[in-house]
Length: 193
Image (cartoon, rainbow, N blue to C red; front, side, top):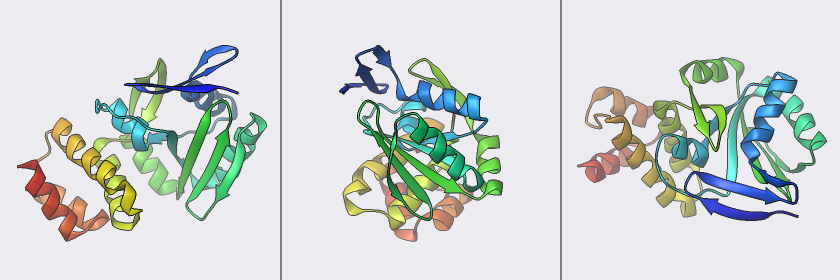
């Protein structure tokens, strides 16, 4: 059984065999099984330069590849924890939790095309673009659990700052209206001033 240690660049899981980062396993699955993915959630926020901690790895995959990801992860010792229409959760004693968000192929291809290759703990991975990451965070704020609101809202503010986005501009307002709420938009404008 592994131990978790937090580092500013994410979680590193230390096993009996030495240090192995969860992302290196995911990248190996992606290469060997030809299953593309995009890092979203906390690791994506970290990749964009926001120091924060996270306890799971969130990945965006095409809905068409959901079963293949499930097979590949289970073959590597991950246990299926939960399966819903848009999410599948896995857990490993040695490597922690992975959440897969599955979307239609057209949506995945659009987000993959806009994603950027970034290094996280020595592994090169595709990371959601800042606008797409903000859209996902806005969606989570609109529909998610209240205990996550502070973390997701803070992530949005930090990503807006890093990207130098004009929160008063029509493009950002449209993003908020499409994926969030008018109230969220007003709060972001207020706290960005």
